[in-house]
Amino acid sequence: MLVEHHHQGRVYVVEFPEGTRVHRSRLTGMTLLFVPFKGREVPVFDEPDELVVQLAESGKYGLRLLRIEPSGIGG
Image 1 (cartoon, rainbow, N blue to C red):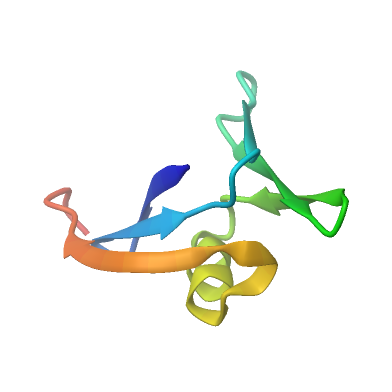
Image 2 (cartoon, rainbow, N blue to C red):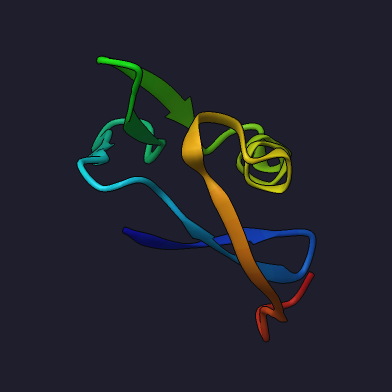
């Protein structure tokens, strides 16, 4: 699954492992991704913004940073 994650005026295109599930809270607007890892699901929150970026840069839980682009949305 490819995710475009906005952080500090940039779009980080992150590849998540196959089988990743997405849950969006209607109440808070927060997104939670459940990443399959070693037979379990690891919850990855989209807040704080830098968390997804740090995990993807380090390759943690099978996340992979593919590219960084300007967001075009203020910032």
